[in-house]
Image (cartoon, rainbow, N blue to C red):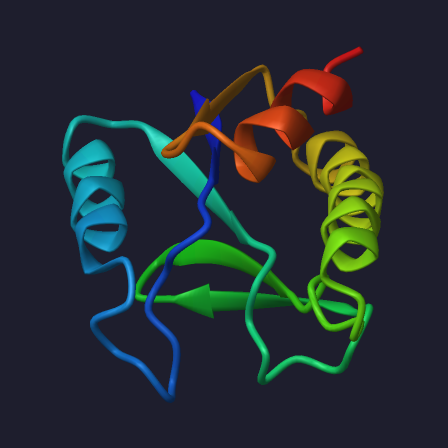
Length: 116
């Protein structure tokens, strides 16, 4: 079963311990036959407003940079809408039936909206 994992934290090239617990849970899911696909919308190494697909240690990871505008409140709103757009694409491309969000807040808000 393919499961989309939405996380506000995930290891990056510049911060290898950021969200390491999420990566460990992804590995555990693989060990029991689940196919996790990760969406991390806050990777500042990605071009602003863009998304990139990577294969990291046998896991498909979508990294995006959705939170970069100078106005904090507007940036949060923009990030949510941009992430929803990306998630719809990920869900369609991968035939996702189940979404797991690690954190209540912006990530889980995107989860609820993207399924509608």
